[in-house]
Image (cartoon, rainbow, N blue to C red; front, side, top):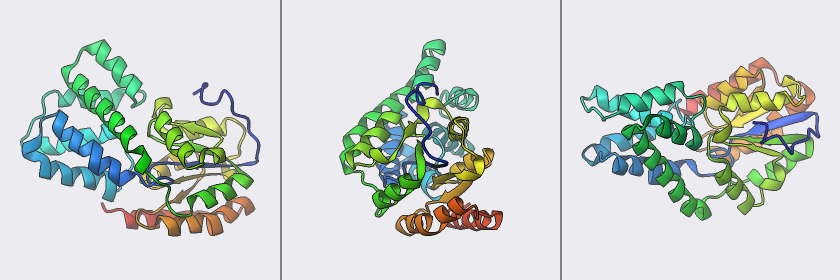
Length: 280
């Protein structure tokens, strides 16, 4: 965490924290449908159950309130569903134990756990994770920001410091944001390597921001929970209604934050809208 903030200096009174995948960048569906799920089926030799796994993976990561959870948490949920159908994945308990007990869910901590335990199941999970990261790198040129994002980011950055708070790899975020000229509108990037989104927001608050002058912007309930854990405002980017959500953020939510009128009733309205957009 210290390294992330080593070159950061608080410049403004207000702070906006932004998720990247599914919020700024239109990447969620292609990553999950073209990379994470197919590679899970291939690496763990689950082809006989591919239809079921694909349906479950997309429900968990695209359409339900679990949208936005870590890729590793998604694996545990899918394996649990298979177990309930009588399909036992060798080593699934070891994977679940690591996901439950790890201080952070990242490539580095997974590598360390494989070296510590020698677990064949965790080594297979590491193979899946590495393959996914490599494939995502080849797909990066196809990823684009949602319509209106660049203009909104410019306006946000004119009045607030901006932190990217994401569960994706920091290098992937930086590459995507640089490709479309968005990086100049971000003061700091927190990726999966530094731990949870809640901890990342807390680290920013420790730089001297008042919680009432901070908002988190994201497309999942996990983003809302990270905001709530730190007592800061949350503004959703609704899946399938991204352009509309960015306009609302720019024209309605941001002025409320700046003028001190971001009331609990308004927050409840925004949360209800996100829950309505996600099933379950």
